Image (tube, rainbow, N blue to C red; front, side, top):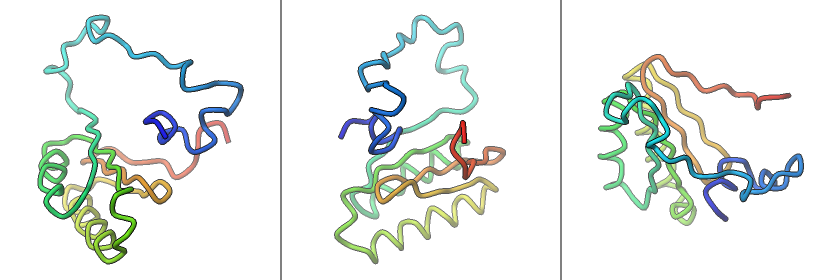
Length: 122
């Protein structure tokens, strides 16, 4: 399953007649503001274990959004619960937000960024 499939959901790549191939990578040179000027960045992370939380926490404390893949943690429920609890605490400390999307992703946001609990268009 590709990254776009994960973001759009399992059936997302076939929804409304669109496929993952309909989305193209945007060349950063086409964007007027340089990435260093961006106030908030979105980071993609994979969590294999507790050690991966340090970089994720740092990003959230720095005011960035993190979308973390937790697929590799499915085998250890207590580890998943502990990691989610730690990320929930960080989101609470910075007055951010956190949601789990399905069984495979956690989205954590910093201060001033909330996550809608409803899908667009519904």
